Image 1 (cartoon, each protein chain N blue to C red):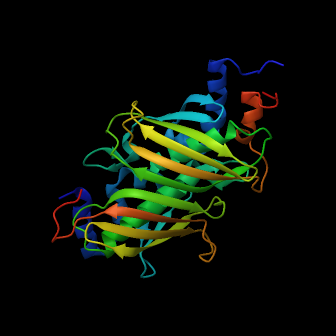
Image 2 (cartoon, chains in turn purple, blue):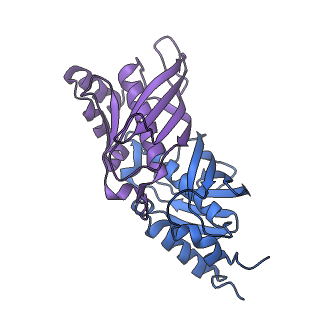
Length: 152
Length: 167
């Protein structure tokens, strides 16, 4: 079993979801981690200067928004579904709605369709006002369920 | 008038400065500019441990590829701008067709194949040196004339590509 899934099993007992991110070097480097203080699983990317893509506005680099939406979808799948493997991304489409200011970015994800091998996930990211999203994404992931041979 | 940056090395150094070294996130990723021509951009991202998504395999996370492809598509747009104007990514689709090989650098190549007054359309691939064997494919569209001041990278078409000279 992968380190991430072992970590998931621990986190299910302790309830400390932020620890999920510790198993992923890129998530640590980007300061992206899940949180569930409000009862809803959210993913937060803590602002730091390395996220900036436009120093004039200033604005966060669009690539980092795509990255955190993808991480938000993965954390959601790990936490909210019965996946037995780490979900494997097939593709993602990111829509950029507003420029993201030098602040934390928060994202929520939901499963639009759960198949036995393929899951379609929608994710939405905002900053201080949830009704004004900065970016949204749709992504497909290959997953494996107990009754299905590995699709990965 | 002679294009001031007709020399390839000088031109790449100029793009390196304005499309990586002065963009904090690109600089943090360590992005290197490989090529820049009208409507075409190529960048390289070296593998490193911090960018790994799966610690068991050492495969890069999707995020660094997203940022690389977004930046590369954006640079291909900038090479075609006759007039400096602010622009921003409108949407970006990425197909992850094969995992990146741990330890190997990723090359991105982007083409801006159509530019209109308001929108620029780009396609890109990421690979390990053989464009026929891609890791990821991308399609990005960019909104031109967005709010804010023109940044230096957004005025590079005129400066580096000599686009004020009618071809």
